[in-house]
Image (cartoon, rainbow, N blue to C red; front, side, top):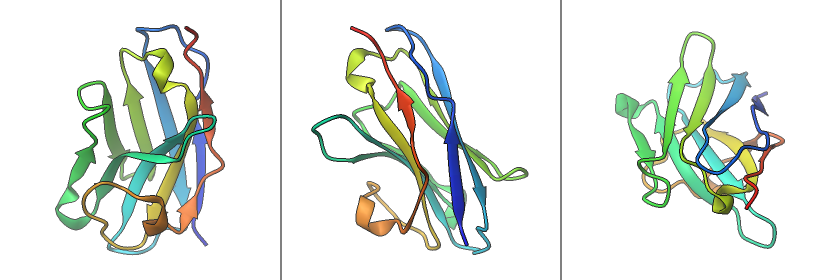
Length: 125
């Protein structure tokens, strides 16, 4: 059973930085994808970044590229999202998700069967 637990969300001033973590357990597949999504109030959930075991490839969407970085500590099986120069539009619940196959391109919710409970990021305007 795959379990994902996010942490690190908080209120941060515009222009600041934040690191989100996702501790994963039960992921035993050679092929996997781990991703970060977010959902702001009244908006659809959107995929931000993903890392896959196939070629150890990472992908970050243009809307946060240059500000957000995805990485993974394979030893402890922890996924990270480093957020820099945040702004009020980054206010959302952030979710970690995983799939036991390689998912290429923009991460989309239907491709991921496993989800964490989310961690809230607030950037006051």
